[in-house]
Length: 294
Image (cartoon, rainbow, N blue to C red; front, top):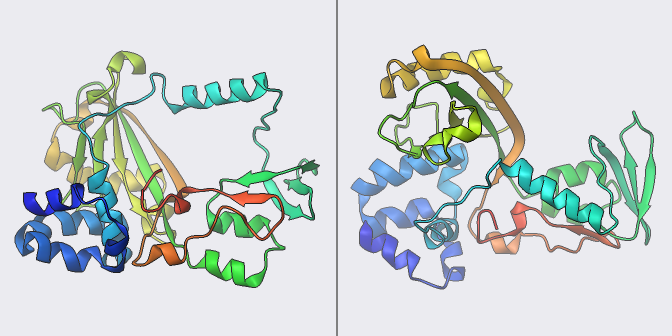
């Protein structure tokens, strides 16, 4: 297995790999045993029913970019966002919070119609849309049908993250990130954030993320926090039988799009940044291929 991973890590050429399915190539490269024990369960837990379609180029990018270093902004990504807002305002810009864009039109100048509650219409010289492609389709009704068809080819998964607040560590050996290789487990990854960032930044509580990428129609995406906790609890107790004694609270966060699906020959269907609408540009994580997050 080590030689297979090394051959990917030190290979600078990803394009030939995108024609090959990871599920076909990896058993041949590293042998059935390590693939079945480690990588197949991880692919299935991450991509579910799409796992057999994923390109080897996606897997290459994940191995290629791995380093022993990790970073996290102190105060969370809200601090990062606040710094961006401050810079935008310093340069004369304005950030509109809690405004849903209901419609986008372009005939040179770009018109954005905000949600019906505010009934505002604002014009802009140029617009960069960072929404997932299927949300872009919902607001840009004037896109030509052939372009819409291309965007509809792009698939993605949502995410459901249950966050535990604990008085004591959950992963007592100091592990930060635990990828779960058991196919029967309902949890893809257990991440004890305070095994990386000091708990003093979190009211001296232990913070644990229970992560899952899920299709929109998955039953977990319809569950509330109590229902999901009932599903997760038996598996959590296998890892830490007494964790509930230190449980303070738990919170559920769900998003409809968090992970692009990268099939073979993805470069042939990835949309360009420039859209058919004049002065409207699309830039989202479905376009950073072959990388997974940019």
